[in-house]
Length: 584
Image 1 (spheres, rainbow, N blue to C red):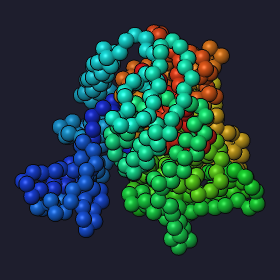
Image 2: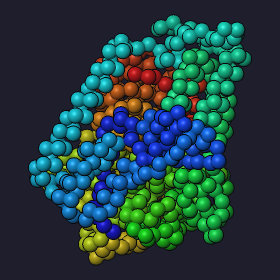
Image 3: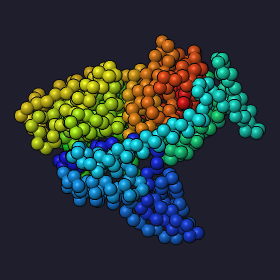
Image 4: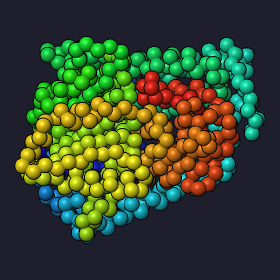
């Protein structure tokens, strides 16, 4: 396995995901003389679906004069990256400079700079460029936060779902509640308003999940209809969970394997069912090792098949494209998450007992996927791999990949490495263990086990993987942890545990205290939302929210159809959903 490829694709994406990624490549020339630049995602005899910097758009063939198919900027970057040698510091510095001049490669520019500095911490030019990049991001975030603050009063009353007094359409008889600040009202719902919410929910699921803006507009329309009574929540929850199946594609047998029938993430996997047992079952997903042209789910199944003996449903996917560090690419990450969603819908899976593990490239992938989606898993085990860690001149930790180690406040992790591993160096795992120790000292419990073994090289631990499986399956996820730490890094991962962000440039620390009906948040962010339910707070009493030591909300919060719909669609999890929301 090539180490630099492992590092580069494990590196953090941009700390600020506020600029739409430019996906220019194909050029669609219209009959009118206009041009649309983007990437053709799907096409049939009637139309093409194009991903542009501004979202997804469909264009009818009858409106198209010609299509010029060209490689996207990302494809050009991938080609240049593949030609850059592993430890060629200047080669990666040159690639970073090329990325800087390209629109849409802001994330890759950061990645290349971090790679250069990880290989040569004293690289002056890269150090200066990295410092400038951080300053630019901090200035941009400061402007966003200031802009958001200017729009709002210091202390907010009830959330949008409870405060909006928009009148119903002319001719409609829906009665929209008007909420008096500081008082608790009884909420009722009439048939017209109930139907409007139902119709909007149908429109929501008719929109493609890729069309985020359109779905957000529909959620805003539901907000305008006001809060709903508690008596409606359970029926809505069941209905929305059922509606989520509209986003699923199912899977089919492909020889001795299964294949996901998704158009973009149609990978194969090996599925195993435990003998006997009833009720809800745990799920273990194992990521295989390998690299360029090698590795598949069968090799992972050999290592982790013992999980079936522990009563687990087991799933061992094969990367869609066999290339170095494939599990750390967006395509494979989304494949794994989609696969888990499909399995949750198809089998009686206990969503509080889902485990992710891997060895070598699979270990790197577990660090990446497992920490970006730490709110999904009960425990992780990434082995003989590593997580990208920035090093200072003195060898100390100066920064961690965004969205990785810090995200494990509520997710246990077990990892090991051979101290004589020549294939994948032990350094990154050692740094990750140091980071977990530091985080534990600062924030309290971070449950982790790290072990090093001599004489195993890149191989397996004494006793095999059985003890690790035993350790993982003893854990059960707590779906609503009262203390979370998050460094967002995936633009499409907006809702983590019970905090949602639009823009963030660093770490967010969030806590709630049910006995005090208090939520406390620290961090730099623009556009925060706090998702709540009755397991977290008492919704019959006022809730106070403190942001960086300042009171920003203190009022009653009501049951919200939009909060319920958004959280259920995002998580597709009957054990993790939210019934109220505060937009800060």
